Length: 287
Image 1 (tube, rainbow, N blue to C red):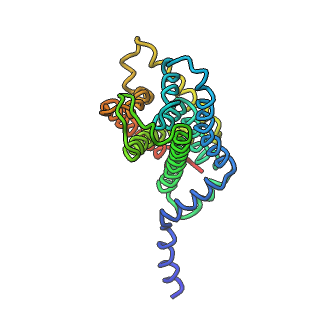
Image 2 (tube, rainbow, N blue to C red; image 1 turned 30 degrees about the horizontal axis):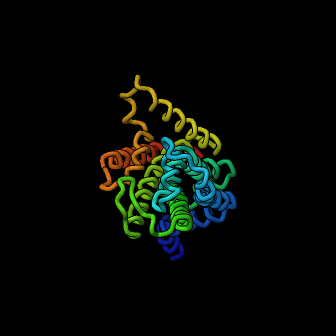
Image 3 (cartoon, rainbow, N blue to C red; image 1 turned 135 degrees about the vertical axis):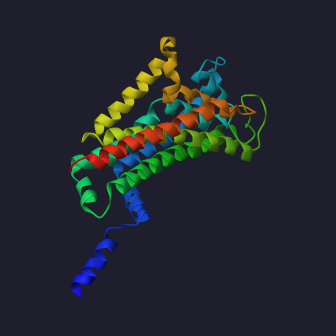
């Protein structure tokens, strides 16, 4: 009788509900002081930009170029500020925070010995990777949403609700402006998920979280340099940052969708490839 009960209890112990693992991962992520500090710093960026724009209005010498032109427009347009901060931070800061999260997810836990507890528990390595990937995805989503919300509030504080117009000159309602900001935030989050998937693949191959951060930093810089070289134009469609400049199209009316759609498809391909490499590594890794 006892042997039968033990045999019946064993299969049940092998199945741990995924939502339970996911919630445990979120508690671990958002209870870390480092995570809270990073989110706090990201939330400060739109505030600092808004203060700088408000103080610099009297000394504004006219529109600039590139990012300067975007911020110059943000000085008188509440819609532009949250998207402008996402455009600027997408080039380096947001990818680094994503790499930090992915590095802590696997390599960080492995270096501290806490990952072994996951491997000894009744959790398959595939489910472990799924939980870690969902944790990284949730962190990046929280970071982008936080920046967007603070950016909206900061933009309204310096410009009010009467300054909601696109780069094409059309005026938007408050709801339509929030819709465009939501599209921008969702698109940026998808790009960060692609970076996070690649970072998880690197994280599954090392015990050093800083190596993951350095790898993402190097990849971002190298990709930016390659995009400037016409000699390797054949390589540009394969580089993730190729469509990052298309984020500005959200501020146009009507909104061009070709660049945004191309960037989204490219990001999905990176997610599939990155998670596939991470799965192949974590399922064949000893210990």
